[in-house]
Image 1: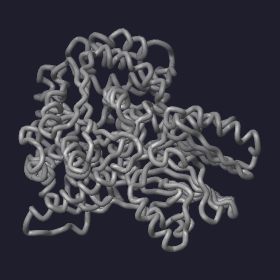
Image 2: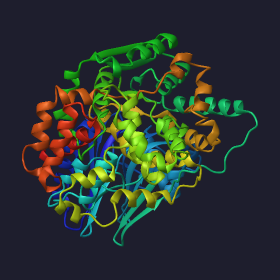
Image 3: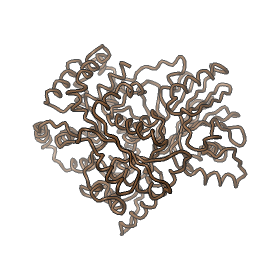
Image 4: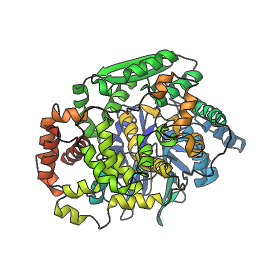
Length: 622
């Protein structure tokens, strides 16, 4: 696990290139505190920071291919590298290390870009071809490992985080107006965009080729819901899933350092802990955190699962002040605005876990491939609600008393009715995210509104990408959207930044492509059956974990933002949202004042809107 970075520029050579590389690497030291490595040749320079997981002694990068013509820097883990190595050895390849890094560069020598299809894992890597003067950059199927890049004036710069790209001298990107609009709805800036003009994220399942001819961006992997697997007996699906997930966890136990697992007490992390226990010869360590606010605390469920499975369980309870005190350091580490408040507890959990292990397994990805979010049922429900009733339902929801609890009934009712009237694909993102179009229209000042193009950036990015979705099933389209946006640009970004900030590697067994490809092709009725989310996974879970864990309501990894705004964060909210002049470049001051007043006086629950703005303004101030 590493951070990678580099550039291709005809104006930078020799010692100057090495000095730039070092600055780029120092900016992401947290991603790889164990080692660093650099390679410079003519107009190209690549480097890495390493967190040592496999082959602790000889795994130093960059690494050359057998023909000495290719050199690689790499971030991630390829879990089937031993099988790939064996196949290459039969073809005459020899190896100087026991790393997956050396396997990838030799596989590229053998197969070129087609090597990507052979890799099972999470990765972002750059391979430089010395003879051609060409660079190849690949990213994994689901975007587990990050990769940013900039390409302008014949200069190409890349890095695992924006920090490293911004270290390149003379690069002074401007903030993107469209990206601010996207952020306010998504709570993050979705790929391929970043918060800056002309700096991009390489999308999941894509690769780049950079040469004297320019830049080529190609897609090498696509999600597919068809053809559906059809079996008369649902037990067939359960047995196949059992085997696939078990193999996925088993693959992810390759390590020369201690491994544990996050355990929230939900179905996903509990199942991963079960399979980890099944495949381990040593005591399994599990980790959870809890909160003093019981509405947001799930530690008792995690404790129950740990006792049931017999793991060596670690648990720590945090106060609101523990969480809120982390806000400045987390914002300081943000490359771009990220409004999902669960980044805070995920960072705490990663820090606590890192005290005992270097690698942790996580249950992320299950909700997106098996249909775990209540928004999927909401989409089913909204499709049969008559349009004439929308105003009545909105009025009824607005009359419900404000509740600061985690995913309370009034919160769900207001969110549901807020999305009515929008196109189904747009509506799904409104339910999941923060500002809708009318709320943004009221917030934006005239100058900023004029800077945005006539067509809404949110409408454009969703409608353009939904053309690639190959399912017509109503709620499965939401699942595809979440795989494309919420999973890639929110969930996986959150886990990557929180874990790597603490030099912890997190592996996600549900995102083994064999599991994903099978799950997507299970008939839709077996994923979200009636009102039952993740139906087929819950049937499997009955074999392995307690029933009450399987059937309990979904809570998510929330924190008491609504209460904080009225108490602990009240002063900071006013200072950040209304102090200074940065916000006036985009927003009407009186509208922000109104949002704060409504929330503090308990007239409206504006937690998501205010937190999204708070993070944006804090980032702008930084």
